[in-house]
Length: 312
Length: 115
Image (cartoon, rainbow over all chains, first blue to last red; front, top):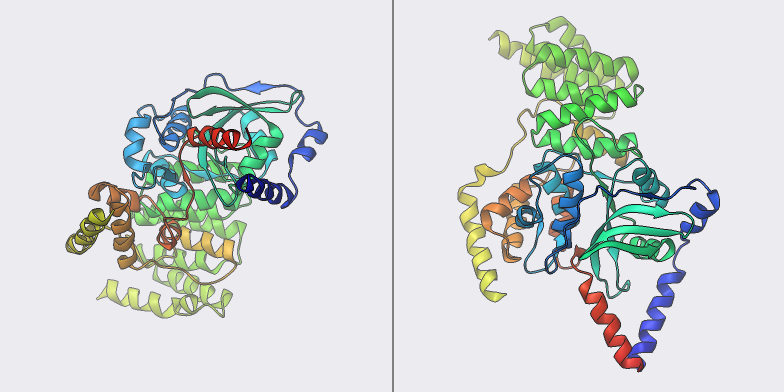
């Protein structure tokens, strides 16, 4: 019985910490019709394997047909922990050539995605803060009238959970949620910096095609963001398409003429095309724009050295 | 667990031999998009680089947690430096999504207790 009292105390502290968002969502009356993404596949999980099952569900919706829970288990399951870690889900998404977009931690963003037709993979803590039971599920619907969320969860094809209880379990997992869309399509709730954070690792891992499509989609959606063009330029540079790189860096400079790194990279793209004078002035520009950045300060000297090397 | 620890450590030293499997940046001369985005998020002019040793270290950990060595390499290569650092920090404490079955079990235990 003492044990039970302890449970009660823990439960209470979980409820007390921080305000929940569901009240606001309900009162906003933003969503009046119910939605349920019926086409979302269902993979009843094997023991402890909710990670592979949930990931397979959203990857298949994004067009990765061969993403089965069995295949994904090899990529994301940790036998000794009997579970899957968040970063492994992100990594497996990249291996499937998709952008793993970690959504803004709000119910509003979640609903935005579901109402746009994108099922959302969420991490939940179905236990207590100090005795966590981590679980991955996929949110596929919401009924504003009954204030209920519909999930593909574990071995349940249609798990119905009250919005309040759902938010509490999700909140205990820091509102962590993953959205995966088809190549070249932005998540409905996508925010520029968040999105670039999701795309840049794909570029780093030389998964060029998916990264190019993602940056192009971003350039179209956010014409005021220079980072899309820097990304496209950097890919072009690494693929040794120096003319394309130069073009994209100029696009980025037009949007944001204050960013030293763009001039720095432009200088390199120009050197590679033997446009030495233009390269020198781009390097000088980089140094002038970032007086306190050591690497940018070295730009003129680095470029001079590169010019010498290429003439040597 | 102890057995797999020994195996993991053995593999760790073995992995030093074929370290080339770790991806290296193709062109170190330009500023990578990853660095630019990281700076924008942090508002600082510092770039964090993971030592190769840390990657080998995390591979060892993954193997210890029952992942096939080759698969461990592929997993590491699909993660960012920041994710790898997070993973290295504490694999035991990180949320590992598992199962809803245990919850039912817990409720059952509570039910027994209050009955």
